[in-house]
Image 1 (spheres, one colour):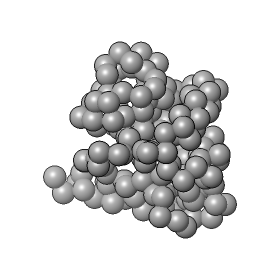
Image 2 (cartoon, helix red, strand yellow):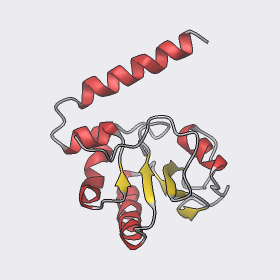
Image 3 (cartoon, one colour):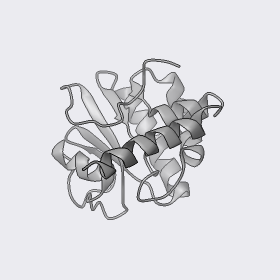
Image 4 (tube, one colour):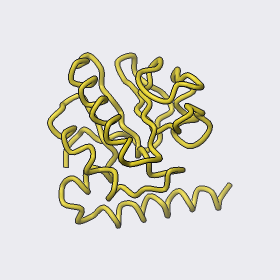
Length: 148
């Protein structure tokens, strides 16, 4: 594994960090990572691209998402002054799995200023542990909710 892993729960950003999240096609940033992105400058009604310290990609339709990921990878390569913290795009409200989404980010492996979620790295590195990692994280989050 490497040290380019996006933290699971991002609550603050350094000045050179960009929060990369999945949005809906209307740019309504109400749920999951999209709601968090609002704290970092995401613009309601803007579904894609750079917004404050965020970068949005509509994530519902995988075919469309691939185009947005390609645009993002080009943007990240052109902006090496930033570190891009990619969240588990498409794996929340859009209901895709890391096994579906991670391969779309395979070119990010070679772009040094892009961090990916642990589940994406695991899939990209062979997927041996991805399922157990996902279930472990899910179990921890479920336990947090049960103790509230």
